[in-house]
Length: 588
Figure 1 (cartoon, one colour):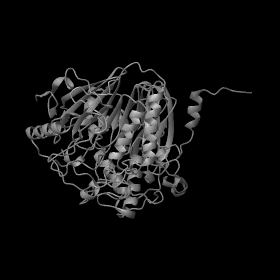
Figure 2: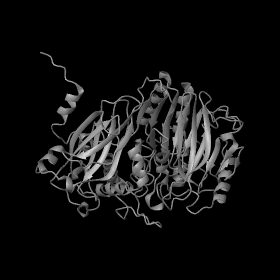
Figure 3: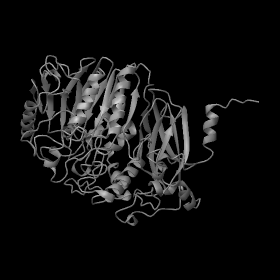
């Protein structure tokens, strides 16, 4: 006899037992490299069967969600007996500490049991999925669930609790993506961030969209943490108080950052789609090292950094062709496809390190030089073509470094920043050639890393004609954002007038560059519709104190099919409150 089992019964059955497998934090970041997973056989063997009591546990770092799909989302929390981080003696193969991890809290033989539930209402009257899992010191007591059975483009509420008790986490809110072939009935709004440096400033920028409740999703383009030892004039010293190398170190550094209340609030309110830049491992990373590490030290350091990032961030495993890929894509209905690239860590060729600028300058024109590795390049070009063929209105590309040519003249130490796409000219040409050969329209490049704001037409200078006054000849638009808190490239203490004068020089030297600002820390928001995209740049006036103040610095319009910034009659309506605007007025 056949019996129909409803969803409610299936969910109830799933809750009978907790498991380690349900906690995705134990998994390998790569499905194809199980050796990078925490070995569950050893975890189970070491556990005594004892569980921490509810009184012994706390939700130490809030909640988060991320990597939304149309029917599922990743949920995250940390349930631990201490807010301190743990030095695990069970780490993935090859992740070997450089510092002695015994200085951290010792691994425990006890486990914590945690449950989650997700519902369409904030009172959890309509629960659509729930689950139960263990977490231990082996994953720093982090917890990652995949919530399923969700509907497209729908808001949900979620919460965790200690199994069998009323001790609960803060409540979180999340949202699924529209289905791939769904016509989206309203604009999709994004907040875009990069470069949050804990000791130099508060993360006020993360709080802006929370207070306004103005976005659906958050994109983070990297430098979520900084790895080096630094002093702080405002009393924000990240732990451990040294440059970080080991798994314990990276866990502890991320945990310090997650104590910032605005960052915690953003994670709780919006689903995040993050990608790393260089400082998630170390400064100016490339495929064989960083500015101050190479060889086996670099390999072990990178594996430790990636392991900690995977534990602490609400991201999925990626179907990988190697162990450390993070590049991936998302389809947001028929409105846009989002491609998140890795232009710093995956497979890029030599970049600027200490004292090698002249050497790199000789390499920038090499045809076999790549900023992302040829496997990622092939994937990226295929994604652009597939997106265009399927009829998505826009192609939005999240990458770390400024894509447009950027002559910086005498303002900086060399005529170009060879750590950006200006150091990989053939790779950039291949991107433009893909757009040309396949008649791909409506491409929007996003960038972070530079700690400054840049808004440009995508102009293939020297290869295709371009009119900087009208934008004719452009292939799309670049929206590059400033830092959440990191210092301006023009200096930490630069005045507004000096910064604006420098911006004016940059505007005059770069025909495609339409607005530039060096002074403000902040973020930008995008409102994406079928007819147009609006981008708003916000500045936070003082990073030295926690504040809700922000300024709308400039606003831009990109119309469907025009492949350039809209002029009406000039870009941004001819007005901005900081920086320099081509053919416009800056009035603070």
